[in-house]
Length: 471
Image (cartoon, rainbow, N blue to C red):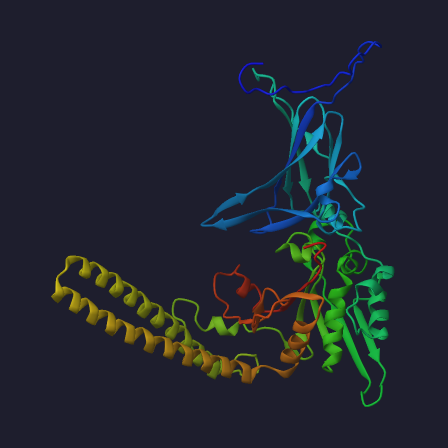
């Protein structure tokens, strides 16, 4: 064989073979590539496990992989980002996928997007589609153009990722699974109440009562669940009680109920549970829960930014200190943001002065060097003063914000941040992308556009359940 070319197949013969040659059938190697295009969020990181001939491939036996895609809109234009991965197979193999929370080890009941490998490699393009659709999860082969001159090199398929498919690949928990998923210390009354969710509640409310014990007074909590328009608009046959609440990880409900009861909070309003086609993967995988009210406290601080929006921002409060943003806080926040800008400008001037000093020294002109050194000294002092002013303004805002925060909201959050079931917490006051580390939560300044994470959580509290088998 010429050069370094390798043979497609190799075989070995036995020495002194007198029985004659034996024909051995070999399957041709193929590749199946899945391309995902989610269209309802900027970035959706979808868990998956690949299956060949009914068996999960070795790489996914104990864990999932993730494929990320999304769509962003700007100036009336939509920019799509595809995600793709390839599975090795052989001619005649049947390839399919477990997706989302159904991809987790121990779930894996509903394989989707199955194709049978033939003479060519396969490409399956899966596109998210909104609406009450009847599309199934079986890919459709793309018809070959009649006037195509060259023979096709791959078989192309298309498939839809609809609300109903999202529901199919979202694990539906049962009451029997609850005990194993409870955080340590969860009371029997709480566990029993959570099991009722997975046996299908008769109404969108849940009441938990814990009797008095020792010096601990009896406690009662009423949880109201608000349905979401998103699943109703995208899933045929969806109901909150049967299909929505039951696809939420039980640990999420435990975190909310335990934290409320621990602090004597009498009621919670849960505004979003499992949903298929809105936001990040957390809610789509049943690991996200949103809270609109904690007791009588509305989890909303949008006024903070409203005072700075529009062509002529008032930069003043609205005169209502009962809406979680006091007039004094608006004033200190304005001073803090101004201090941030001034400190940034001062650091930029210092950087420019330092670069000018380097350039002056290269000229070997002592006068220029002395002048540049003086400019650096002045800029250094100005930058240090600006940093001090920024720190002072930050403390003033933090103190005013914290002083006006309702006790229910603060205590509820504090308990959630300690819960082993919680991985992330975002609310109108703070943002914590990893509650499992020791980093202090950052204040929610509601920075960025309307789709920024801070702005999105200016009007509710969100937790993401800690479940490493899924995310």
